[in-house]
Image: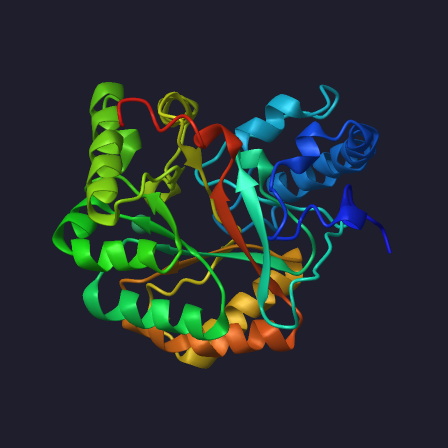
Length: 315
Ligand SMILES: [Zn+2]
């Protein structure tokens, strides 16, 4: 079995300081070796992204990965929607976190920090919070002992502030999704920036937690919009597996769809919507199926650079 950096010291275990590896010089060579493993993966990833089989909204590597990529690897053509996690088949992370579904925590400073080992998934819920379904989802997550990221819409957080606060109180990760769920690509840069800021402020006010993660409504993204988000120290998070839970489907169809896409990809970030009753209803079945099939649910948390520096313009 391939070992990952720091595995023997359990760096990826939750109970140890998350940034310990950054001060361990002995780990540096290990990380260099890991990088050597990861960089060649960009070639097949690019091929996957550009290929006709990439029929989902995922279709490109994150801009941060492109910047770090070997210059000999051509940057994939930008399309709407983005892959924002990489499943690295040659990497493995110690999963000494118990027999259940809960996996490790990834501390994220930049999007490209989201590197998943096979069978690792990230749960994300967009467009809430809402009173009934969001609470049901929180209860299910607690029952399975796992954490997700909630990309809240500002107006929803404003209207259902107590539910937003409950999401934070339960230790879930908070993200934003603009104030009014508008397609930012249709706005002038100043208006798009204002929409992002207003969303951050509304979610922060409701939850009491400063959101550092961001998802573009409709996954509508561009270089200019990426720049706006980066200036605000927000971390854009895309999707790898769309549950398509916004369309009517039986629980079994939803579970099978997600499991099939995960199996094809190896793992990834799953898009769901806590607005939907069907999502609240099918979540227990999905988590059960993930557990049976040996998946681990990884939680994203803001990384080291956010400890001392909230997003610009906010206390
Ligand atoms: Zn949305």
